[in-house]
Length: 177
Length: 73
Image (cartoon, rainbow over all chains, first blue to last red; front, side, top):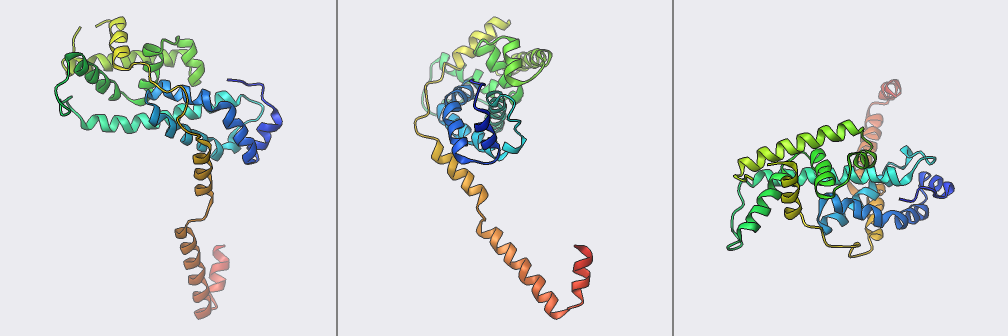
């Protein structure tokens, strides 16, 4: 994300100038959108989370230090908004205990994929985010630590817990290697 | 089930999501959200009017309540 932004623009944003905020939105929208899409993996939900994230940024503008990176600050807000969405999805996933063929017959691969997705969505959101970025997106521990503003040790421990919980959940769902 | 196998299962369960960019301009929705959060709602207005009227009536009936009000302020 571009970090060498006009400091005056950031100061105007902190003061509540909506034109400055729109300018920042136009610059960062695409990157925030892709970042959230990588985490939640659903385009329509992503749009709502982008709106939520920028609204939170505007509401919390007084806490932003205009001498620091707007991109990194915005990414943390976006990650928190995505985590909140995953929390809701997790609650919904907990209501579903099996993958039923209510939409007609499905292939074995399709049922397997849905079962894995269901098991994954039952993980705590913080673990889901780290597991998505590490296992699905293939980011390194260091990259994830920088993006989430966490120590590398915390990323490793969350990934370990995610893998352990996921193995347990998949075994419970009857999926074995 | 090793980590590599788990990675393969997850990648097949969560394929790369489609959508290179938002399907619409999201800025108007953000502006609406900001305006909705800063505007006084009807409930806010009703509560403010109710509290103001309650204080005025109390003071009209019991003028000495002003001292009590001043003490708590």
